[in-house]
Length: 291
Image (cartoon, rainbow, N blue to C red; front, side):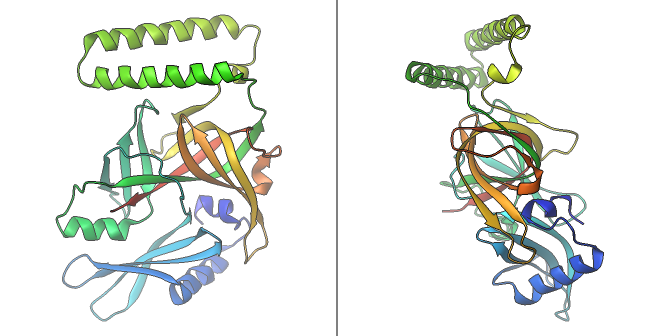
């Protein structure tokens, strides 16, 4: 079973139940997409919701005799926010007809890899030879298997203004450093050293989560997994219509990038609240918005 089925409310399915669920999605899916891979085969994806904006996608191929065989399935949460307008590169996975995307955003500070949800539109655009396309944006979402709710840091209005100025200043320095500006590279290095020294001094008598407001870093050896901490902008409790399991759908901002996050209620320690922080590991997904 897909590890993140638990996130969308399927924590107790066995193999036979998974097979029945996959069959039901293929037969009754309200959302279907098709495109040709070659002269004989057509790849198809079938998606069915178990809660608003939350569901399961099954991907497979039709052969020349119109027989469908499914290759894989994955749970998803539909993203609703524009997370970035940076250029996105997409690569096919070696084992299956699935894709990962990567982008670099100065707000993150690292190259971010995500699992591509809408692969059929991407394949169509690729085969039509219209890529790269101007005006595309990216919306991010995430599924989580474990999380902790942390209280917010105490910040005054002046602190928030200073944080915005610092973030913008750092973004400009990173942009300049990418262009080869040696002075910007030196300034970034000095700022990082100052930050490290300041935290190293405070960590002896303060908790690390009272010093760090948000972070986004790779987790483990799989490229689409991350450990994050972000501020909760909104949240709601939703229910899987098939199993009755409850899930928290949250809109969070992490390193100034907004995304949707879904986690099973049973896997969260603490009570979500607007302004509080969510800390956990995620499987990052993304949807390219073609103009």
